[in-house]
Image 1 (tube, rainbow, N blue to C red):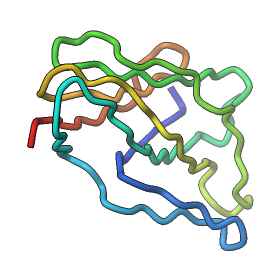
Image 2 (tube, helix red, strand yellow):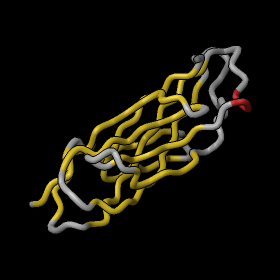
Image 3 (tube, rainbow, N blue to C red):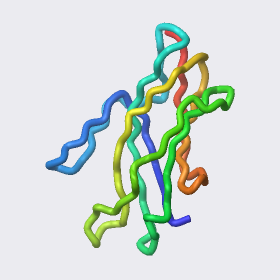
Length: 130
């Protein structure tokens, strides 16, 4: 495909525009909530890598979150892909978005990243009651 993606789901992610770097706080594999239904609020860090000959303007990326029953609880387009790295570096971009969705039941929620409707990455987050 020419594009690879890795993601981490965390409680908080900060971007330093001067140092051009992200700081990730509390990577999540599990989230305990006081009650269901609940508003799950997470931050997602993306790391995309591209082939050098890739036509970035031909790619549309999106994210979906599926609940334990594989129902879509969140869906959105992701920011446009651009390579901001110097020519000596592997082309790519890092970024983050906040994702909020309603969690109705406990279980494994799946964050899935798509490029032109093809799955390129997935991340599980287990949500349960405290």
